[in-house]
Amino acid sequence: MKQFLEIGLPLILPTLIYVCYVLLARARGAAGQPEVPWFWLAGAGGLLAIVPFVAVALLGGAPPTDRYQAPHLENGKIVPGQFQPAN
Image (cartoon, rainbow, N blue to C red; front, top):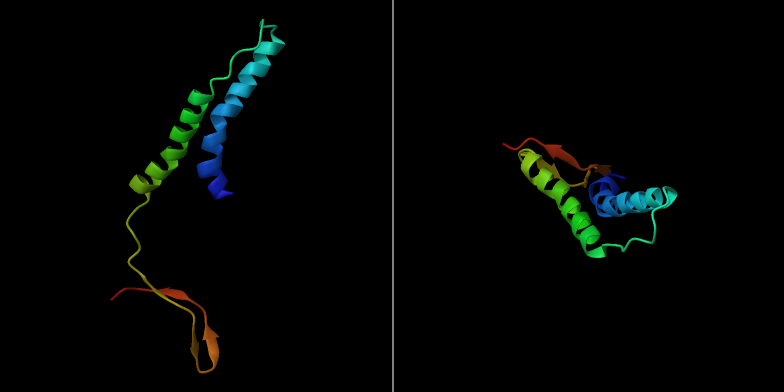
């Protein structure tokens, strides 16, 4: 779900807005069928898809300092993976 909200939604949002605009224009009786500006829709979608990546890069916070300990066997039992504080 998070991937859809961060990547998919910004890509399809301009097209959805345009489709809603066309449907409203037809309902109001606008003459003719408007030409679809695919280039601008794709450009706006691509730009909106970049925004979450930039936001995460700038606002994501400091990288974790903890060290990951992979799952391992200890006395015949599997100890699950865990993060341990870095020394």
